[in-house]
Image (cartoon, rainbow, N blue to C red):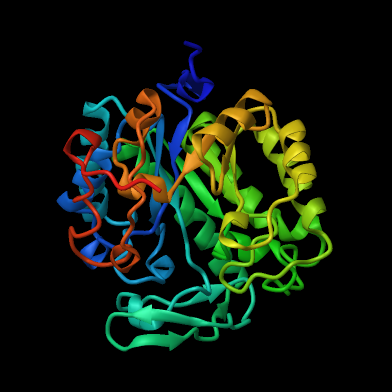
Length: 368
């Protein structure tokens, strides 16, 4: 029987992945007081057979904790909490990167610890509402525009957080420059209307992202950094603009010069949103010579197709990993997937819908 290409090994920087299946980052909101805990360790350990785990978004800053109960990596206590998670994943033979996510304008003061501020490239309010545990859904506030000094400080927060992640035992970090969070907010002319060197042209709007990437690469090593993009995505009140293709083509060229470990493209067309055009995926593939991860609505068949075609090296799976902690095993054995998902538990605070999905041998599997 022919070996599935998605189940072959892959070299990511200096790390050998046991397969090409990535557990994509998913916010799960279990970090009480923004501190990683034993419940989270159990969750990630259950899914350690993925070739690579990319964690949920983790804030590099007090100001980046825009959602309730998301973890940070800027304090000693948070770093210690993550150590137990990397340890159990490594004990099971897994590899794990931390996704660094500063929420920027996508936050609310009721979700921030004392002293936290909602910051963004420009003082432009996002449309929509944010959940707060205190008062339920609330309008997004108008963010405060980062001053030049604050911008420099925010860059250094990413760099320090990356070092903390490595100190906590992570194999690397992923910069979250997708889905409308701070780094992507710099990329779009709708959310970035600065008049300094960080706004205006494509080169200026990409400057902060590239400076963060270069700083993190210099701090922890270029092979230990990846970056996530969502071209054409509309999540968190992002809008299409005429220079999307030019922006991401330029980013791919500049990131190739930095020789970072990977670019991770997320396509949400399976959820009914605009997709990333194949031409742009191909352009990024051709411009960037290291690993490409593609995520978005994949099953095993089209994962095999896109890896075999050379469009991607790794394929990310998100929701299938929620209800199938043993997803890779099921792929290996051609077993049916558990497709029952309880969306009401995605962002809850306890173990229900988090660590209680069974592996195949334990399951009464529902397939459709």
